Image (cartoon, rainbow, N blue to C red; front, side, top):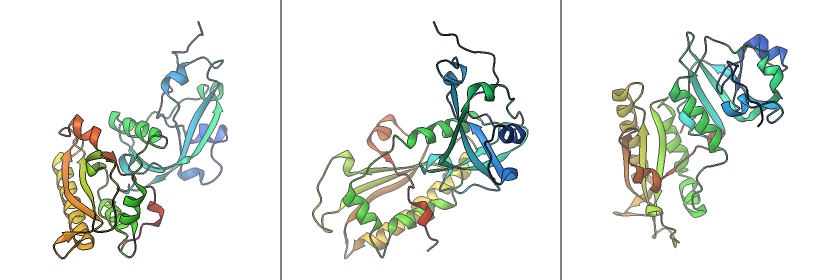
Amino acid sequence: MQETRNDTAWEQGCVLSASSAAKLGLLVSDADGAIAILISHDCDVLESAAVEPMCEILIGRKIGSVDGHYTNGKSPRRLHLTFSAGAASMAGDFLATDKKTIKKELLLAETPQQDVRLTQDEHFTLQSWLSSRYHRSIFPDEFDRRLKERPAETHKKIANAIKGTGTDLLAVLFDIDTGKAVVHEGPDDPYALSILLVYNVSEDPVRAAATATKAASLIKSLFRQYYFRDRKWRNIELRECIAVSADAISLYQLRTTKPWHFDYLEVVTAD
């Protein structure tokens, strides 16, 4: 049986001190504002170096405040993550591609930063975001085309409605044609869309509910403006857009909806 370790303070989500990150050669520029966190799974960290010789580190930068587009894993390519469990609060901006690997023995010789830590919810967000890059929803090409069609570019306007939600909004869930594969012929044959805005209940539930309700109202107005003409829906019919608390969403709803991720946010405008 392979020997395993259980004598380390390192676990997924631990932050490297600036001195450790520099010593290990993880910071190449803007060292003062950089963040390096361990993202290898705890089991891999504890496993013998003969089996798991390397550890994976995610490099980011400190930011003053989070952008709602990137909180709670809404974008698989970029994450704004808060660290609020320790004595010092901090927010970071991370890109999925900014990863480095180092030898485990070098990492274990260092000590993680003790005053900056993730809460259980923040750690779950990190794990979900890391996995979403390889496990995310695919929507019909024709639906995407209709949603992004110019001049409306409704996808950008939905994103702008989400922008100011901060950590209040956990997920944007789409139900297209009640999960059925339907071929639509032309604008007079619209997709049937329902949207659930799942809001956070672990911080300030009252504020989060108000934030999600406001975003739902904005999105409903957008769809009526761009897809409802002459008393009928064209291209996409928005059947409902509602705010749902994270502790009230049903297992059925989770199985029949798909997260709508913000993959294109670098081109979102403020119009």
